[in-house]
Image (cartoon, rainbow, N blue to C red; front, side, top):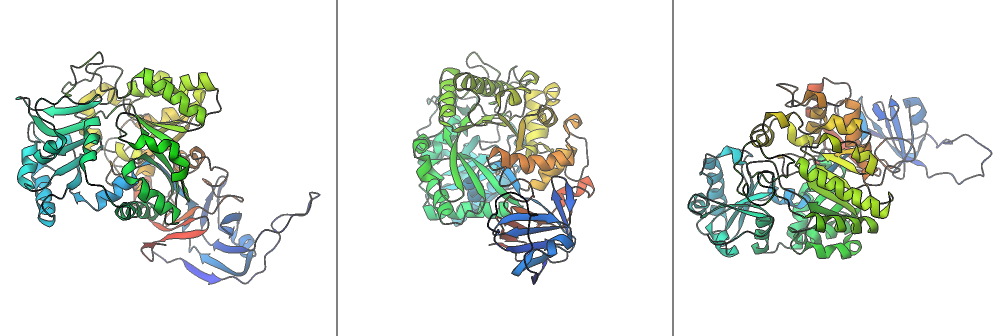
Length: 575
């Protein structure tokens, strides 16, 4: 791989626009950065070069055109044939959880019981008695019936509380020490919206779901702001290395807010970030941050969003809300209430609709977690109620995940001015897709899994999110490729719903322009054209022309935000 080459510029700045009858304006600042001899992807196709002045793109064009613009002392980068494209947007990440996981007790996603136990034993050997061992992420389909129980963890870490997150971050597996701390016994009834898995004898197995899983976090010792910052830095640095210049943190909670704000205020947070404060039954005490959101916003972090969890996930727990009952029963709440067999509704309509309407009136964006087609429909109806009450001037609310969408709801995104956010990082055959979801919903509904083409063709804004660390890697090039192929990276194997493939051009827009638009900064980013900030990435290949099965192998050589180089592969570091 040829390195990027830099040399000082010598040509004087030329006029950037022809004279006209308009009033004379002050000349812009001199061009201080030019990139030559590459392929620059623009809205109209591609060109060779790019000129930047004080963090703003002032010209794109041929090498000859751009070379003459370099001011005295300007930096000139020889791209040596490499590709430049707009920076990427990941509209659904969990920065603190991802960074914490990188620093916690880890084992491969999908590991069997023996591997999990060995990892916990190793972590316990390094921990002090009484220290919490936190890690993940386990996959329910990887265990034999009855194998996943608290006693396995008791034996692995007899002196420590243990809490392991599942692949979806909606369930946890804990040992007896944690159950005792939380006061969970065979007689404990779960809080509304929560689930305690039990064995045939009625004893808690140690697997807790949804609200009950999140309630456990109240017993974990508080993490210092310094440790929060370390986790957030680890996560955001990794995103920079993949070319991600903007993101939405989809679940901001009290336990991370100090570190997130301090890091943003210090200037350490380079990306444009939106934070969604958790509201609802699993928010803990995080709802109190909402009226304080402006005070907690800082630097490039804007807390202008709330997160509502409408349901769970369509995995072995069957907690995603479906319009029709699950094909295979077996969820611990299958026989509870009027929605028996159709999932676990977390927020009743008489609470949800007024809340969404109130947030909409205040201009606060609502991001819904909605995995099942039943909860997606409920989110659509809540947005419709807000539009009826307040008109169409409110935020472009987001319905996130959309594992299943009823056909009748597909056109509503454009009609009601909201955004669909789907998760292409998840759908290539992983245990989540090929085992857990398929078993839960049956083959017929799998034909409607993640209907990306449908929502793109509907004319609504559509964005993508990784849900990292639900997926083991935040690598957006996996998403780019699988949006186009719906196959395992490498474009092999049977596709998942081949009719829902999109083109490369559409995939690029989903990851760039659409994300910038949803964050209210399309005038500043999302495409490479004069007048926008210099938010771009330099790649080792052109994802628009290489064989499609190689897109996931794309490497980012450098990431720039507002003209500042914030990642360099040659140095192996963020700036």
